Amino acid sequence: MKKIAIIVIMLALPLCAWAGQKEGDVMDIVKHMHRIGHDTFKVEGEKTIYTDPFKITKKDRADIILITHEHYDHCSPEDVAKLQGPDTVIVATADCAAKLKGNIKTVKPGDKLTVQGVDIEVVPSYNINKKFHPKGNKWVGYIFTVDGVRIYLAGDTDRIPEMKNFKCDIALLPVSGTYVMTAEEAVQAALDIKPKVAIPMHYASIVGTDDDAREFAKALEGKIKVVVLEAQ
Ligand SMILES: [Zn+2]
Image (cartoon, rainbow, N blue to C red; front, side, top):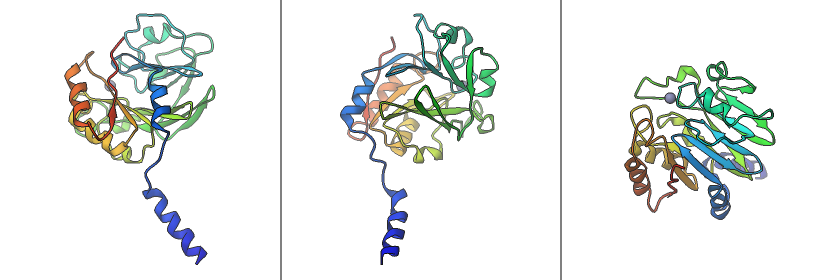
């Protein structure tokens, strides 16, 4: 009987939704997240983490910089330089790393690493109905943990099947269409991922407008909490 019970539990486990952190704890982290613009976020925890630095106007010091792929609006050497100090660690794909100098960890989808105490999982990020970000390029998104809260940075991606298996409390999702998901597709992606909080990105800079972010928020009303962070 015991054996059967264990087997039943093991079969049921993957079906259980990931409980994640309490909404209050997640919102505490959201309060420490600043959207600089496009896909650039500053996350202030024990460490200062920047994502895809682009159009940085204020010099700052990052402990960790996460870069999803080598396109100029994500992998920008001049913007990285504005945040980089002697101890800054950059996590980037190989094609981006080739453009940068400093302490760089080169990653591909499936990698797991810990940088300055921050756990980072590297996940795939690619297009399925357009050609700009082919799966074969091995470009990435990240799930990184700040004070126990898992933050997913999607990168330039469409709604991909892997998303159903991502476990995160906060999801940063592109919504502009053209090179990435449309707002409507991003809504479906959010429903796949089921984060406590979804934050739209990748609009009002190169492509997309504030309307895309609003449309995303409106469609998820009553389903998933959406926080639209004003660009700073
Ligand atoms: Zn791109």
